[in-house]
Image (cartoon, rainbow, N blue to C red; front, side):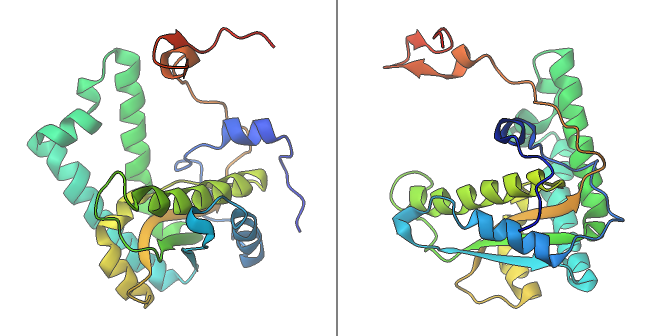
Length: 236
């Protein structure tokens, strides 16, 4: 196993960011380190004690270009065009103009710019990992089989991202690729039962220093024994 460059677990947990601008497109990523991180991710919790995930790592330039073309289509159809047309749901979700204050608006503009940067350069990312589920697609978004469906693949994804960070690599969950799941399967020649859920671009980062992100006060999002007793006041 390779030597981790970041060994403090709290640092890994608090500084694993969605990396786009700081991906090093020129530094190759070896297959061994990707497989090592995937092996670590296999220890993630899983629904029904079944490894219903499949990971397809893509380093072939021609295949990366085809996936990049699909991602560009998705950006235009789900972000760029709806925002330009003032489509209500997308504007509420993504437009900087509807954020509450100037700092939040600036932050959202930076996020959109970073996503567009990745859209424009996805084919240059050294490795693209397509995570698939072999579970049946849940009939309802909540309840039924939905918890097990997403509760397996995303712990695997996050463990993979943490392992990458500890080894000096950056990643991001590009879940929008699921909009083209059928075409992703066709590009990669995947069986029908492998359902792409997310794409994880992987590259070494330009520098290792990442800061914890601004987050809400714990008392605003966590509670004890119901919604009235706010967390955040306990002493060690």
